[in-house]
Image 1 (cartoon, rainbow, N blue to C red):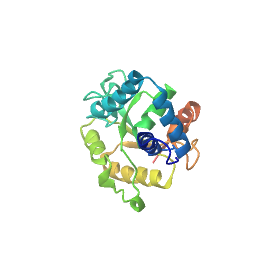
Image 2 (image 1 turned 120 degrees about the vertical axis):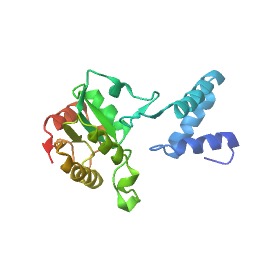
Image 3 (image 1 turned 90 degrees about the vertical axis):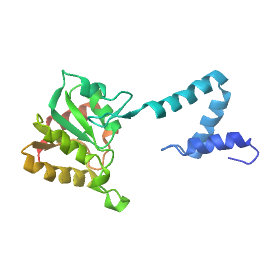
Length: 200
């Protein structure tokens, strides 16, 4: 962005450019768009950001994002609490929920094992998963991490930890493309991957 622009507009553009997938041209368009809005609309947008940051927390059970202590999925007594689908992040829960086919509950790891990036198992929410299983009542763990090197390594690591607990551990069938990202998969692909999952 050229130096002739007002400093607040430059700063706003730079803040938008920090968002994932937003380049400088898109950031500039967003900044100009926000400046063209009414003060009330801009304030509502800013308040929504602040409110989301202040109020959203991790579910005390599955660690998904929620504004309550326990998320609506974990609170739902009609869901199958004996089946836990383990995912990398909250966006993956949303992807599965769009299928309207999965009726179990989730566990969000908040990352994948990746020693090259400095992410080790103790930095993920694996201990919390093991604690849930040890409470009893869990029959199956579905490892629904992405079919990448990190996703496979994380799935195998958790499967080894669960082996002594005599729990059925399955992996999503590879109807998903290798190297693909769950949040971008369509509902049919995710449903088929769930339907054709394999025991690990």
